[in-house]
Length: 192
Image (cartoon, rainbow, N blue to C red; front, side, top):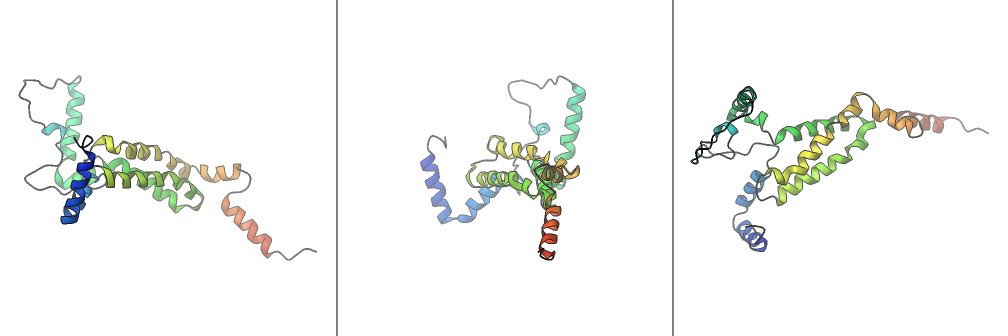
């Protein structure tokens, strides 16, 4: 519907924004809240947990392949879904939080800061979703999740010192040693 009448939808959003900007900003924050759980009124729900879907009227029932696996995952969902715990277990946030931790760890070390470049892509994806997404759906956030998960292996470069060794393999000492040698060369008395 929105795709077929995109111009009308944009004009509607523009008119509402001019009349009531708080409503549009609140909608954008809710539709793009992949990092934080959106505030939910007591008499409504934003999402329905898999175990909370009512039985359908067609008589179709769930028949899991493995009842043990079903009971195990159902127990996890039941534990993770209460509002007092949802801030920690909000599923859209888990890959983003992991990627954010990786980029914070990369930023702390001078020799790994060049690995922050993929983080810019993640930031642009999050901003794009925040500005353009009409609803919170996985298809709109697929790029965010993909880049988040693909960022996790960068953490190994911190742990095993690969970034420092990579700098040494590219023709010289790691950056800290190069700076020390340049400083020593500048402070040495002129030869001659």
